[in-house]
Image (cartoon, rainbow, N blue to C red; front, side):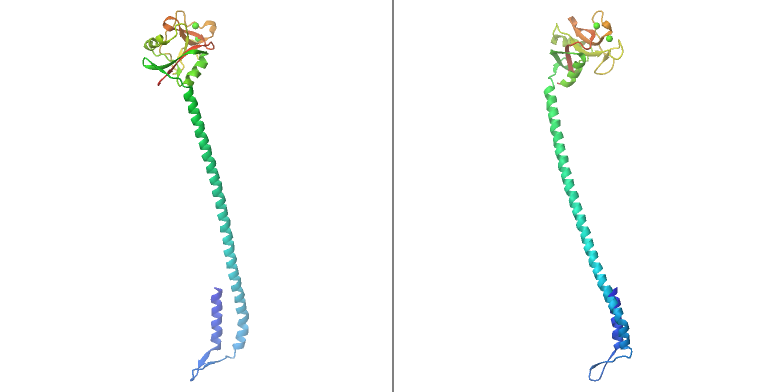
Length: 240
Ligand SMILES: [Ca+2]
Ligand SMILES: [Ca+2]
């Protein structure tokens, strides 16, 4: 814009001088009477325009420098964020690997804890003949072995098991009346026991302390017993 103004003023000056060409093709500059006056009037304007033009150019240069600085800062910030993201990604990857390793350790530990369940009749069982536990510990241990405390469904299931049991041992099964006296439920299903086979005179809830069921003796009939007492137990699983 300033350059355009300056060009217009210069053209005006040139026009004020004028020129002619004589017969000998010699350029003769004719000076108007107002030439000197006009020049004196326009000179400060030209100088002012020149100053403004310089300032304009300086301003443009400063703007360019500032824009460059800002772009440099933005670039540095982006690089910093990129570095932080790379660090976070590495940490996440490391945590993921740690979790995977821990999961593998837990699975390995669980496999080591599992017991081989033997196919007896139509089900799979682990008969614990070496360790006596309370009914509560037996429930927990069967879960740890990969199954649950025996849930008897019918006489056929019991008859298939009897040849595998030690005739002098007693075994916990999953039936209990812990929630309501004389209401015998399966710990496995939470429902009423499907098969009950009481010994004569049982359940007697002796001393009002017998809320868990074991079985022993000929025919391995059932008895309610103190849950804290320790006996052998039978675990059941849906698979080997
Ligand atoms: Ca009872
Ligand atoms: Ca009893």
